[in-house]
Length: 152
View 1 (cartoon, rainbow, N blue to C red):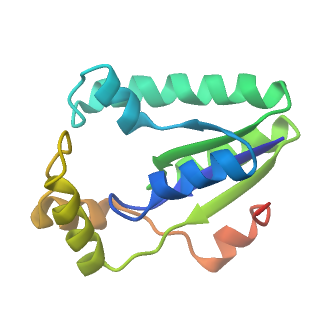
View 2: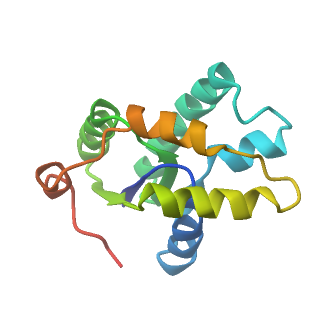
């Protein structure tokens, strides 16, 4: 049983990696953006997103208790959030991975601009992305070392 946290800003490749891990491990993948889109909820509706992510965490605990592997692709922008999930996963006896997708801001902006041209995708402007970057607390080597090494 394993809990995998995908950490990074929009456009960093969390969904691409999560989809690959779901097949390779196998694992249950929980993606807030996909669920918000399926439920036809605005991706920027922060109160709804917070409730959904809380539900995902409860569901992840239930899945881990069944011995399954779970990939959460919520971004995990703060150390406090990552620390809490590390404690919760370990309390259940799960290995807990932190996969940090460290992508330069210019590349994130390029990816998001390309993605915005795809049907059904939302636009995240460079200004918005830069604002997100000021809120993001990237994990350092010491924090990453507290987590289990990747399974694959």
